[in-house]
Image 1: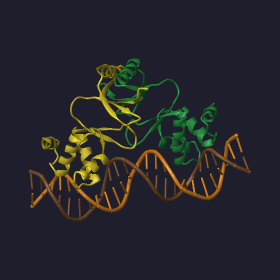
Image 2: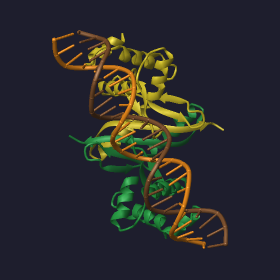
Image 3: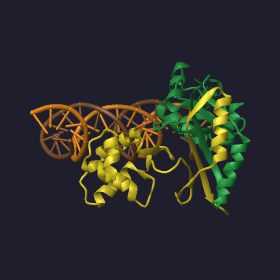
Image 4: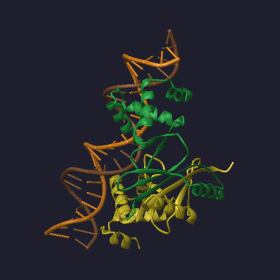
Length: 133
Length: 133
DNA sequence: ATGCCTGCAAAGCTTTTGCAGATGC
DNA sequence: GCATCTGCAAAAGCTTTGCAGGCAT
């Protein structure tokens, strides 16, 4: 139930927030820009402001409900934070986004950070790929 | 000699281009935003327009002279493309940027892309770290 | 009832573009 | 001399913010 997540985040359970969460859950694209979410809202017959979408997505990000990515510069895309951590592969021809996880890479990252005297807090790994020729 | 690189890129050797290349070569920070480069130009007593900085940096990027990164959303940073490929570690407390290279990770990336039917064209890996506590 | 939300419009930032004059070759 | 380049100012694209009214509790 979405409303629980919203409440747990310390936010009031309002219609726009419920709808946005539902869109992120049910949309065929798991990675959506603010504009995408906004359009999906309108198509679903909801009245909403783009500013609200931005505000809510940012709040959801702070609450850990969604993850913000910057695959390409100029705009962010959001993804529901469910399941396990994973990285992304973006096809530069079709825009397709594929998720993957590699324990080996995760492990190396931690080792590298520590060998420089740091703790690894987060990381961003994006592979830009092309269909095999 | 910088002028050779500019010429090889098919660009006219103009003062602004030479100066920008020199700044990227000599500045203490290896990773600079357009605004940083612009300020450095002014401090060096050069007359220049911010638009020119953006245009030149983009041309240099196309020519492979510089690499554009998007460590944080909202703006790009540029780095002279010299030496070998490497990835980056950003300290979220001090902003320090450390370069590193790990053959193991490079290899895994290629394998992962191929196991999904793709060729790896490029990748972006940034570790966000904190001084060891 | 009260304080948090929302929509709208305006503003903010980085980056791009149009244009007339300047410059490199 | 001619094409390319530059600076300025305006515009564009994404995102944030101020404000007055609206809604959840």
